Image (cartoon, rainbow, N blue to C red; front, side, top):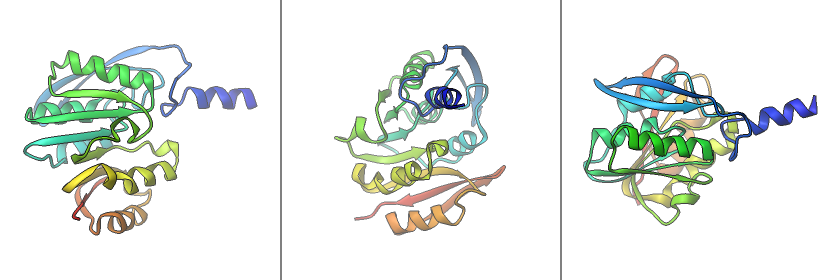
Length: 208
């Protein structure tokens, strides 16, 4: 029983170095009328299709006119690559602890002919700790635990420019009260910018 439990843990999409055999897949997606292709693989989140939360976040995200954007916990890169395509004036950074996911994100940046994005490997904000962003986007790794999700929210301000926005998609039935309260504690405000199919997108604006 213990051995099986360890195997499941090592193969989880939030693992830094998945041990499972790499089985690749290809997803074709459309966001706001634009076509994308994403290479996916085993031990990476939502490898068979674009999940509903990602779809809602991408199609409702509010991007700055210029500056830099962070997609934290990027997986194979759907959110960050879409943001880069929607506004070529932005510089997009994507981070994930999963080395397999980051390698896929790099391939997908290239395959989608995106010139204004890059993917970095590391835990949460560590790969970009020297940068400040005008927007942070997150479809958080809920399976990694609520403390990880809370940290993504509470540590965001350290990497945000004044007047930057933080946008996160959550399941309506998970933390429907807790997350808006945490947004309000962290940013002083919380707005629900989209709802659909059991998900909602929360936005907090950081004002010094």
